[in-house]
Length: 285
View 1 (cartoon, rainbow, N blue to C red):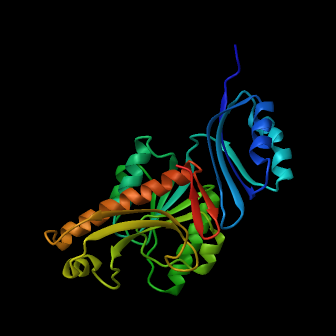
View 2 (cartoon, rainbow, N blue to C red):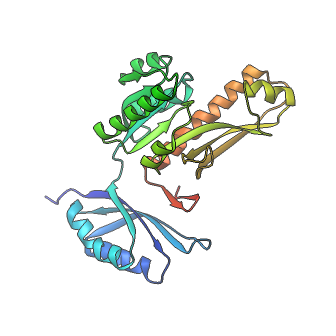
View 3 (tube, helix red, strand yellow):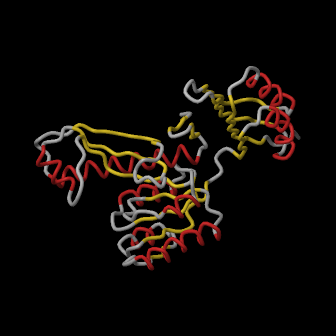
């Protein structure tokens, strides 16, 4: 009987030089690998080369990695190799709004999102019924001052260690993260927020949008950095609206876009399709 095939996803980032693709594909052939998906990009802005491959091979992980190691070392690559479809260990933070959390949990349950959520952590009790319905443990810690905020963030890091968390998702978590937490989880936190043209600050942005007669609303998913809402953008969506929509209808439309946009960003991250090129993202769809 032939040995079962492994299916790996490989991401490679390095300075752009001649021969990278040839050397990489040659090493895969030596490992008895068959490339089932291949995408690459050379950034003229930064001089960096990006590649994502999916490879079927009869080699096990250690043998496959050993075959690629000389190429990784020769080109000083940042490399990641993992199994295609492996669920990503994901911690979800939320506050009072439940639409993004619900979308993530139902798609995880139905097998449409390759993540494993061991815990939902919140600063409110509002989302507990949602987590309970999907059988996901829920823990809340109110944030009322600087001390309770520090305690909450310490709990986030504790849960990241305990559950081997690979991704933290802010599913409408309405607290600004400290610079220390952003640094500790750099490149592993995704946030979602509404987007209006023009933008509105303060309370009840949907009523402000209605009063100004906006024609486009949407959502932006991005990585979290120490600069508020300035992290590398992963996905954006917009939808046209008009004067006929009430503030409540605008809110419902906006929440749909938030859920759709956040879930897409999480899916791409879990499938190892997002690579960072400075302050922007390279996404192999």
